[in-house]
Image 1 (cartoon, rainbow, N blue to C red):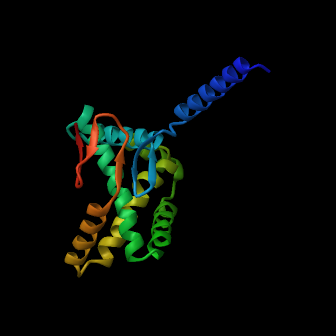
Image 2: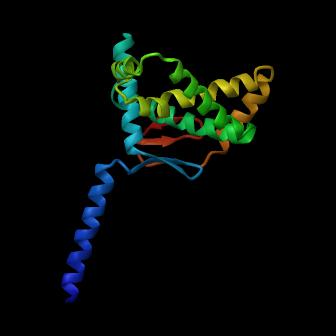
Amino acid sequence: MTKKKYITLAIIVAAVAVALVLSYGLVPVFKVNGQSFTYANFSKMKHAIRTFNAASGKTPVNGPELTAHTLMNLMEQTLLDEVLKKTDVAMYEKADELVAAAIAKNENAATLGEAVDKLYGLSTKDFKKLILLPQAKKDLILKHYEKDNDGLQKLWDEVRLGAKVKIYYPGFYWDGELIKQK
């Protein structure tokens, strides 16, 4: 093969790779302490927030405000994981158990799936990952620090202010405390 054919082949392979990454939403939206969040998860969360607001009668949040709200929600989930790591890693397993128990209590899985779709526009799997699991973690942390609010606030501030954040979503940045629009 000639050099020109190698270059053409390399360009085609690169284009296919980029197309696959984009089509599966694997492009990172932001990174916190080395952990990336993909556009796929960002899109699901954004859709869930929009759908829930519409279903609950809340004033819809749209445009850049919705984007910032979604990014901040995912950021808080990531920081919550950091708080969990510093508090008690066993809480990860407990959170999974709480979610599994809550789902098992539901007598009709089809009804749960319908409700999740109607309220959040998510699959049950995504609902568990993006909504239930973070809430279970939050509940466990709050229970753990129930009598030590100052300790929790100190740990939260330490994690939040010490976070290494890179926002890749155009038009937004991390100011050290919040995600803001440029």
